Length: 209
Image 1: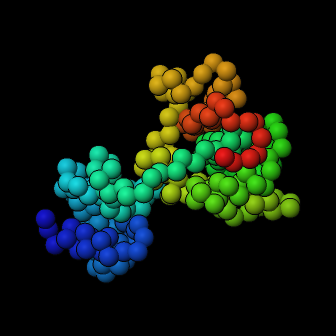
Image 2 (image 1 turned 90 degrees about the vertical axis):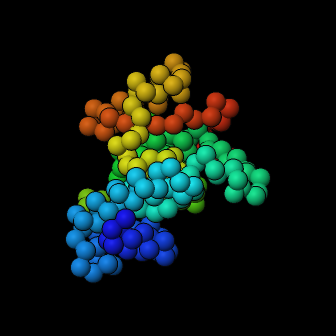
């Protein structure tokens, strides 16, 4: 391992939060962002078969436990947190069309969306306020967060599955026409991406379970 890779490794290990290649280059002083990206790829390969992996989530890099060893570190019983169908739909719309305003979400869903649904998604850390649309009224717009990518194991939104992938894995039932329209709409806009199926027993209202 060369000196730059060692410096990157040390910086990421000591960092309080994930860092981008540009932030690492600035932190390390004389390092060029291109060289840092090369060092990051080398480090990721180096850690590929170890108990700790170096991963990229939303262009930010951090160390995390290898997925197959997570059970060894789990000391508390997991609590399954389910989203209502409405919250799952809203999350899918934001993921495929971000940044979007609440009015745009409602236009795509065809029903009114309560502020509580967005509050639940922001409390989970998956959605954030991304600014305001520069139109009359300047409505707030929403986008997904790096925690969303991390939770679903995605490097970027480009990794979201499309309609064909969802059908192949059985995650899209014939009755899920609404979800197909959400994904198809995103694909027609160039997104080429998909969403998660809502729990079958979840009610179609804006209440989280």
